[in-house]
Image (tube, rainbow, N blue to C red; front, side):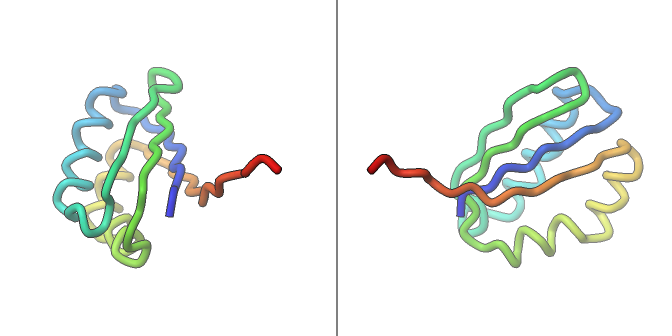
Length: 88
C-alpha cells in the first residue's frame, strides 16, 4: 500500500531523516519495500512509502521507543493511504 506520512518536528530535517530511516531499516523490507523523504520545510517532511505490512508499521509507530522519540522531538504524524488515479 502506498502511504504518505506528513510529519512536523523540532529537530532538523537531517536528524529526522536519519533517525526515521533507522526505524524503517530495522523493520526490514518485508514491512516497507521502498521509501523517500521530501523536505517540506526546516521542520516538516513528507515521507512516501510502499508499505507491505501495515500492522507491523502501526506497531512500530506506536511502540514505546517511537512514542519517546516523538515526545523528545515534538513530532506529529498524519498518515494517508495513496491510491493511483488512472486516466480513462
